[in-house]
Length: 259
Image (cartoon, rainbow, N blue to C red; front, side):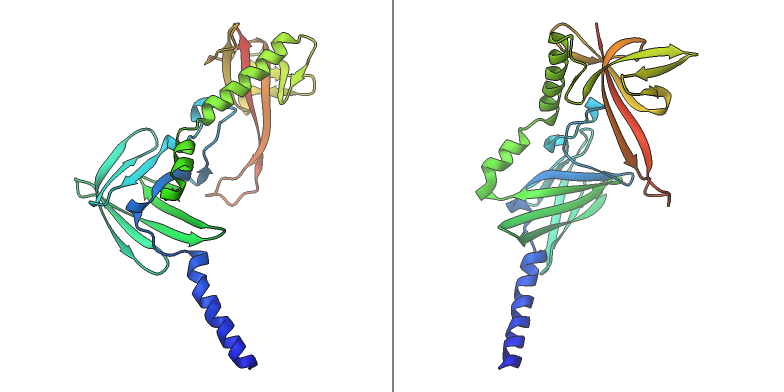
């Protein structure tokens, strides 16, 4: 009896394993939404970049679409569009997809369908040195897909920055609002130094960006200059994948100067 139970348990595990790890997914039956991309060894996800605003990643920053007639359209980072035809081959674990451009250039990728607290889809394609990772949404999740596609991390992020600047502007006695603090930039010997109540940073050794804001708290890029400002500071560790070195700290700052 124990042997029979063990055999049935093993067969059950074999049966559910493909559902847990992945199986084939016909690409044209799914709407694909950017989950992340990997470039130069670093992984980027859709989010607002609080330092370099223009580098914010949206769900719509890259898109891939398939139709049931064998055509695809791939909008890459930066806005370039590659279109052509595709073929796919199913297996128990995944669907292998080959993209072919009119020039004859080809690329391969994978689509998967899995079961983990519901049906999940994923896809990966590498093109021009960038690996694109997508989440998939079928007809049952069409509304959610459209909501995410129309969402803007940039607009939400800029709105939050404006609220912090407004808070400090309307309350002169406050030294900080959230992670935003009053600061000043000084030029010494041709180099710029950022000074807050707690620290001094040489901007030459920081990852930073400078902005200006007007009386309505509209934000626009500008060059760094000496003067009072509001600063957002962040300290993080960076690892260069190609080098076997320990993580090293990097100070990052976004500086906002009133006009």
